[in-house]
Image (tube, rainbow over all chains, first blue to last red; front, side, top):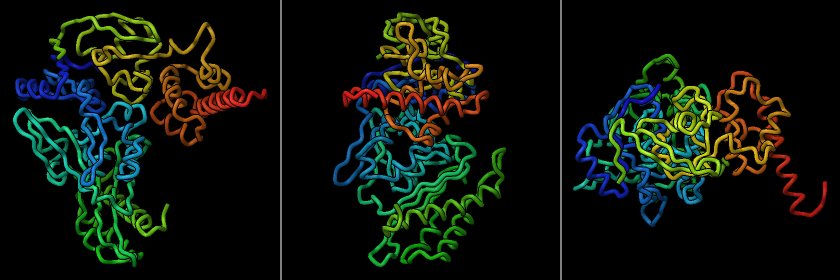
Length: 292
Length: 174
């Protein structure tokens, strides 16, 4: 239960970090909050030979908003997002989702960027940011690029990021700040990995017809899944019990969860439908002013 | 930029319970082991070593974190509080007193971590609900008490603190 030896680098500027990253090749591993990385290092599931600690890069810790984007720096602690008045105002889905991440004691250290690049398919931030149509900013010594979150996750713990690159920011379009939103999660114990989680954002017109909807499910596949058929079924409609049932059926029909010690495949699929419906219902009620 | 080779031991300086410590560490040494083995502060307990049990929780710059999920080298220059720093002048901290009175511990293995989390928690929750206390405690495993006594103790400490503040604020005696 002790990690293997590694060389340690703590750059004091982003440029230095890129320099070490490109020199270390495939051996270099970035550490931010370390709340997922250190457990797997302690268990020797991972033994990077070179650890690059970015906790000195204070310029990557911020929450800002302008007319177009809400921007969260990669090193921003989850606890700061949870407590941020700006996030509560501009992106309340995140305020609702973040308390489900681990525990207060791990959110104090865990970062936004770390959670997104770790790409656990049950993780709350990737799910919520995908529901909010977010993007990530990825930089290296000689390039800076942006990737839509819908293209970012490739499979379990694997993303579209190269060994010499670093995620520096996540950004959410301000236009996507929804009228209604909900984050729902089921786990055996509070703070455990979710068996299934669902994030939903909904906008409605004055008659209560759904004008825009995004529904994302986590824990049901190797990456967070955008439930597009369920979303399509909702558009242009007012939410009735039969429409809700239909959307829930579509959501769980299109996922392919794996069974494990914690839940069978069938049970996860069942939960996906139940939690999709709860998220849609709660988001719709908020959008139409019926919910809290 | 700080650079250290695998296995290299360098001296780091950090403040623990108000006192400056200068001790040597190698990169892979966890903060929990550093506190116990290099600083001799064995009040911080090591349980699961992967962030689940909460026994090793300490305050780093005022925030409750798992000391098994940090390398000691990352705490260079930090201000750390451990359970050894709670009592002042031989008097137990208000939380320690409440834990004793409410039978909030039996074997005591999980207690240092819970106390440190409770210090951070009460700093930001002056008047916590039972549910908020339970949520905070979800980050700690206790196999003896069933948690009831722990919840009672934290409620009692919060109540006394609030009562004390009222006394100070109004000038009334209760």
